[in-house]
Image (cartoon, rainbow, N blue to C red; front, side):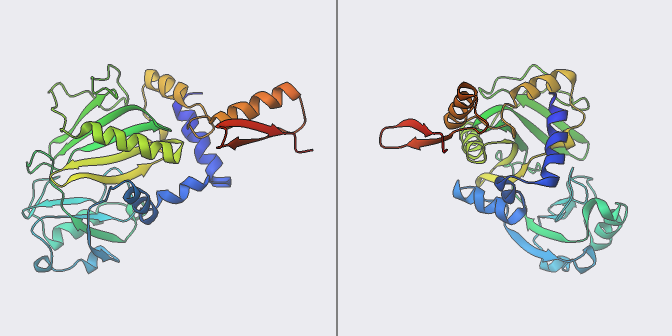
Length: 288
């Protein structure tokens, strides 16, 4: 199956029954899981019910992030750097924020907003922290995508797990940036953490992290990157081929043996297979 078909099938399947790991994909539970790996998101400064109840600017830090609780693709997000909206280069004000939000369809972002601390890119610049997006299938990181967001547009880099450039276009609308990117010193730590979290969830998931002046910070888990749309033919075939288990994770040895015994016995029900930690081996019984 193509990658887009895998994502579409997952979406339909999860409408009927979601795997237990999906519980980690809301904001609170995802933070709980990330914290077990020593990762934390930006600190929350304010929770507000609507843009109209935004605290007075005097009560906000000089630099902060204002974003909707729901939504995607940076819609309704303001990264304020020393009083300037880093996305547009315009001076931030309450009226400015209200006007910008008013231009977005309500259903796209909802009404609730959160004010978070403004993180700083690992190189100490005023850049919005680069997004590091790790495409993981269980513990295996297929590649990672780095995004630099500016008021003039976004720049994109794609890398293999060994940090060599990925010679494949992934999204039709995202060109590889020709400018060389110097990766942060802790990129191997980021890859290791993405692999560990991917192994824990044991499914296909995109794990978003930031490299900042305060270390590696958690972004979010994304089970439907780009909604499964816009991928090139090469990426469709390649990523689809990496999706082995139902959810794109790794078949455990127990599952493999159970499948083998089921075929061998030709029984109407797969045998139960148990792991014996004392002998570090496997045994089974037919249950009936």
